Image 1 (cartoon, rainbow, N blue to C red):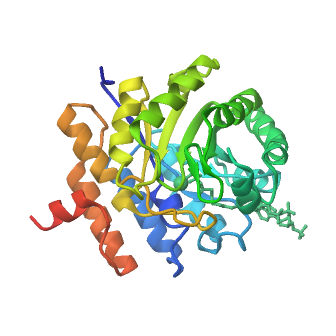
Image 2 (image 1 turned 120 degrees about the vertical axis):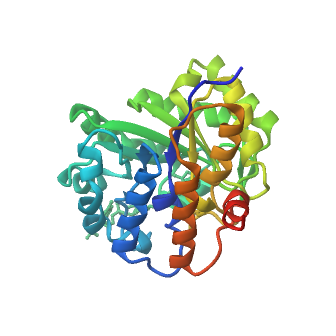
Length: 302
Ligand code: HMG
Ligand code: MG
């Protein structure tokens, strides 16, 4: 069976933009977040409190977050932000962030490239971040990258992913997001990983999925995850995205493609597909190139 409702964790303003070469004006980012909220998205990842030299596109987090944080104060919209370490947590808490996400890796190569740490050193870096966030009543998501394949290490064994997933849970993460950072997963592999997590005591209800669409498998993978009981799905408006520290990473599953499928299946998301498509068309104009989403293209050329 399928869930009656899916919570979409919208990552367009963070994962979608972090890879853009030309710096998007802060006002445009704020408008993007507002339009996403207006289209009915209730969880909108706003930005990252990472080292500004590591992700120059998001170096304006201090300016951006206060421009949109009123959305979260009404209680209708959650605005999670990425935080790699205590310095990032301090910055996020100073602005009143109520949801953060740490981001670990299942592979050593990506941990080194993305966080300048080994896998275990990154977990040690997250430990005080999660503890302090939880003590402050802040919700913590734990991303786990390279859950299926890694551009340097190849296919990633399920047991290796399960170990780090359990470690993130043990730190106190409220939810996990399983990242197919480079978009190589296929549905059988998704089922195998979710089953492996279940056998290790990680319930499906605490797990979201985060697919990039490099090989066109993101929607199929999502359907396999929903059939397994997953109800939280990450997606990026217009299919924007990629990771600057993972070669061959392309955009995320497009939120419009996801909503088209879920609308067709009768699964509720709360998202207005017309308003969302208009937002992605507007954003594509700001970025100067068309959206890669098939659904955006189909609906905007009707
Ligand atoms: P490092 O160079 O090891 O940092 O980088 P450090 O701890 O040695 O500190 C060096 C200096 O940076 C210090 O300053 C710190 O204060 C400063 P100094 O004392 O020398 O003057 N610093 C900071 N400044 C501002 N904000 C901070 C911060 N931290 C340290 N938060 C670090 C380690 C983690 C900081 C770096 O590697 C980093 O920022 N990495 C972020 C990379 C990133 O954002 N990648 C993209 C997101 S992950 C992703 O996209 C995947 C995902 O979508 C899921 C998927 O698809 O799989 C989530
Ligand atoms: Mg990603």
